[in-house]
Length: 343
Image (cartoon, rainbow, N blue to C red; front, side, top):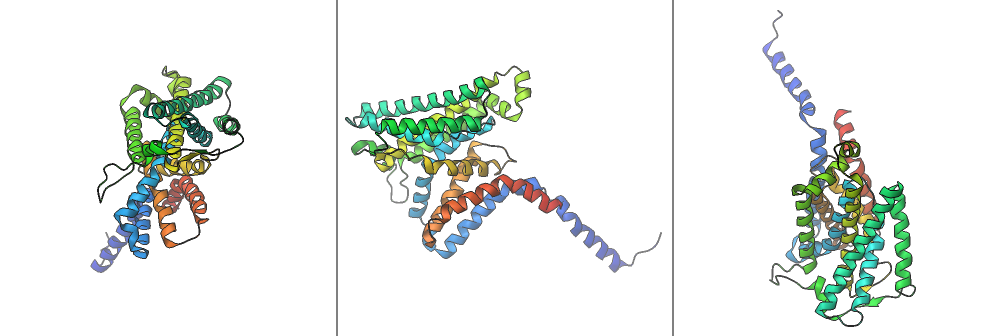
């Protein structure tokens, strides 16, 4: 055996160790943590440029602005879990607000507010059941079916609002979303934040601890295997659509409460942002797997970005540009990281 000089042996050993470092890095792990790292980098950047970014007041704004998008996005996530798109959520948001507005146009009593909320949620559930029925019953692609439903809802909203007239709402109904609790100097989130937290906790519990949740997850994982194991796939796809519709309609009610009005186009800005948050959440902490908490992180990511853009004084056209860019990166992130570290 040929002797290797000590210096050469040390150099070879060090070089081999360094060459093995990339092999020890799991690309999937990097992809799962990348959104959180980027979010932290964003926060540090905006904070360094605008010290008022990292203040209690600004974070209250970010959290409050996340509430409505968060509710509709986590509801959409359930539909995405079973492998279905729901493009009718914008229409469901608009119709939910209009229904609440018309019920409350006479008198905003506590009873009428309760009836308005329950009525809007019931209509949202019916929209979801309708989507699920035509998708599972007629075998229509969910993308096409819910796109058609969204168009139908737009027409219904225009009919119910006499061509798109705004319904003005005032008084105690606005407290449903805008009341602050607790109203402390350093902590004063609005009620819609607590509604978001309740929805997230409920849906995460359903998905993790109930038979229905596990079956929804099974259908999304492998629909053929789920069917062969005796799961009634159609039933759980309809249920997922119903949850998505209810969350969208509930968002419409809270949006009408926050703004004091309901109009035909209220839900339009939410569609792209909800999908962006859900797809970003699917590559956060998990490998291309939709989950409620990931979607919530995706919502926070978007709202932190929008807040930073506003504080930096950049033009508002950057918001849709950034949203579209984040969506593209979220969908391609795992593949990009894998090619980067294996290529």
